[in-house]
Amino acid sequence: MLREAQDVLALMDHLGLEQPAILGTSRGGLVAMMLAASPKSRLSAVILNDVGPVIPADGINRIMQYVGRRPAAKTYDKAAETLAALMAPAFVGVPAQRWREEVEAFYDASAGGLMLRYDPRLREALIAQAEAAPTPDLWPLFLALEGLPCGVIRGANSDVLSHETYLEMQSRLPALQAVELAGRGHVPFLDEPAALALIHSVLVQI
Image (tube, rainbow, N blue to C red; front, top):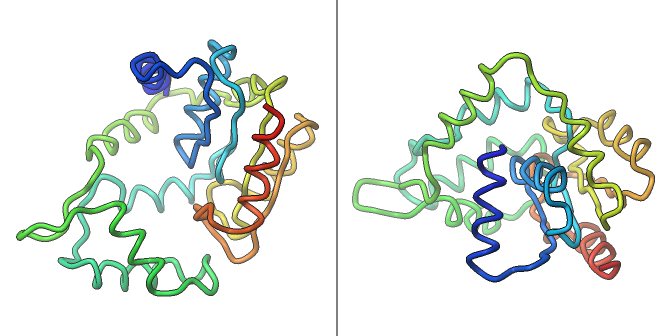
């Protein structure tokens, strides 16, 4: 995560972004916390999408089943159908077209099937992190958000950000704005009205 945070800073410098607001989804939220723990003056706000300083093993194990791997499905339609069936227990009332949009965001269509649109070596980084001992305490990184406008969005059915951790985050950082979305797992789409309301509420504090 430290290496990835350094990459983000390098990109910010390249783009001339002096003090952006960061919205970190899943692992991106961990990187955002790492950024807050180093040159916090480079950030204007942080919003965490379904991630916190404690990651349950069940959530990690589920993610490792697919991250860095090409899908067996050969077409967008089939991949969307497979994803919808897989996510149905955690996501309620999501139309088929929304799952189609998700797979189009993650994969490129080719003659040989669907190809990952992100670096598959992310899987290697996750494995290396999981094998590192001891597991680092991420609460100090989270507490580094103090003083910044910040918020957290949680899917009520998430297996990555538990309800207990979600509550503890609010207890340890009382200024944290928080919302829990019914019928959503890991990760919320961020087009939900309550998610958008929290994002706007944090940003107006900048």
